[in-house]
Image 1 (cartoon, rainbow, N blue to C red):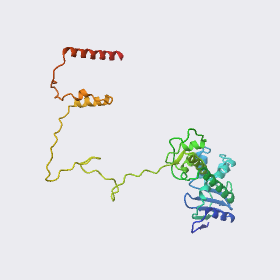
Image 2: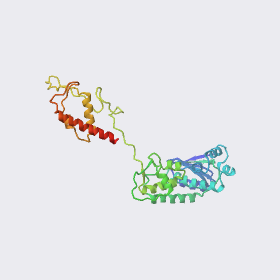
Image 3: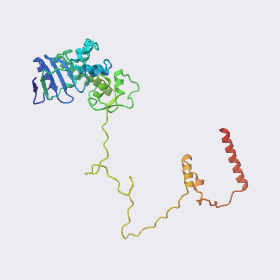
Image 4: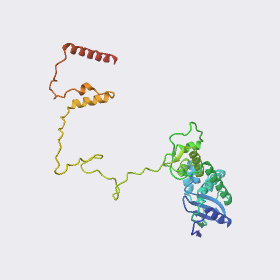
Length: 337
């Protein structure tokens, strides 16, 4: 097995065309972001894989068409996975070909980027899936051009192609019409998942997911998540925020000491301690008075507990009238219960 590596960045589509014209069999490794591998068999593209798109195994298992244990067992058998699944009756040949064809076009969109990148070719390398279907390199290139044009027509900005996405909190129009695939993407745009993460989560092709996200972005329903807010700047050379001075609480400052030789001003006398009952009474008035201050209680003179209040007592008739009115209110309240 020989490996050819380019010393400079080239267009991967041009390199693929040259390898296909020569009828090569092997794997074209494309570097860059996201990169991937294009497998050729006698000059035909037999499979393409990329970190930006789910493969055949992920599409079959995530969609529920194939149990995950069945795919893992077939992959660990050492045989070609595709023909083995068909022989065991888990898939039909048409299902396998259709899924593989979609995975090829999907991954090729991300691997065969229009920008120059470094590539290398490993002759004789084959994919574990085995020969399922073959695609002409020229047809594949024309389809990629058409798909890029569809993306630009849907939404010219590529701000939703890479980073995390978030759904807007309020719809920009009074009424919306969404497809099932669009709604499934909106509910999972939580500010943490990118387009690639969403494609793997819902079990859909990466390009299809990206196209729907661009349409949602054009409608104002999905945007790129804002970057994290920077933390408070730390003092130079410390690497951490300033700490409060000793003897002071956070947000307070220690009062300045008088200068030497300065004449101290008059010292305010400390207020007498307030009894606990008076303090609790004032808090109750402030909490339950509906924003009004009880002026009568505010003007009551302070007294020591156990000392009789000063001033003349109210007339007996007035005191009896107050007691009778109080009892009437208490009785009415008990009857209401």
